[in-house]
Amino acid sequence: MKNFLHLHFIFIDYDLSMATNHRRNIALHCTNIVKIFNSGEAEVKALQGVNLDVYEGELLMLVGPSGCGKTTFVSVVTALLGFDSGTCITLDHNLATMSDEAKTAFRGKEIGFVFQAFNLIPALSAAENVALPLTIFGTNKTMAFSHSKEMLKAVGLEQKEHFLPGKLSGGQQQRVAIARALVHQPKLVICDEPTSSLDHKSGQVVMELLKKLTKEHAVTMIVVTHDSRVYQYADRIAEMEDGKIIRVGKTDEKIL
Ligand SMILES: Nc1ncnc2c1ncn2[C@@H]1O[C@H](COP(=O)(O)OP(=O)(O)OP(=O)(O)O)[C@@H](O)[C@H]1O
Ligand SMILES: [Mg+2]
Image 1 (cartoon, rainbow, N blue to C red):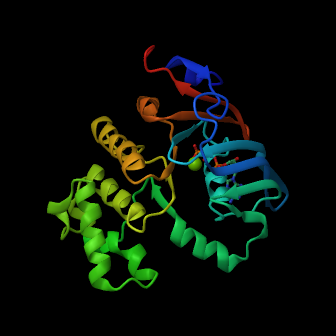
Image 2 (cartoon, protein in one colour):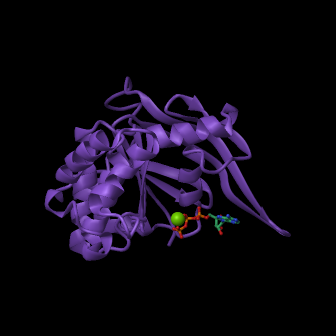
């Protein structure tokens, strides 16, 4: 398991800041983040000193064995979870000093989330699901639906706007979820296992879309994945093990 990455592609050590583009802005800056879960007697050190910078406009994949801390990490950097020590600056916000109210507003405005299980609301149409992040934060209905339709078009589902999630395929549901994650023009999008519930072909379609939208919408995308077949879509790959980032690399497309 330890070297599972290397079975699938040539992995070269690669620090973007030292190589091609040292002037790129940083979307996420983490140093020595420690997160400990205390559940009764047992203590789990889920993050054991994570160091990572993520650059604006890149698609970074976060990979590693089950239980190594990937979901905990993306929850910490989006202020869904607190942490015990270290520094986390997300989109210029120092999370350690933010109030709960500020964190909620920050997440609602600046972050988009895509989950393995799509998490669409079954009783709402595709267009209503996508409009939701806007209407919740007070955008008027006409404007919200206009943006919703634009996003559904961007994910190739303009014909499905009236469909309920239950009438869509898994791949289509995930594309609706992606439209919903991007409709409020967040700066950072977190995708936790976005292709794990999909067949291979739908997974590739979803990843191609995420890659395209990262560039077209100038967002920073962090994609947590177990699926080695989608590594090719990463700008960089961060490998996690036992609560630490042990390597950050880049696929070499010429060797692939
Ligand atoms: N709420 C919690 N309370 C206690 N322990 C937790 C909690 N959430 C996660 N953990 C523990 O923290 C560690 C990291 O979990 P995490 O969910 O971040 O792993 P993961 O890398 O996302 O795994 P997977 O690939 O299976 O989704 C695990 O040992 C897990 O059991
Ligand atoms: Mg997880």
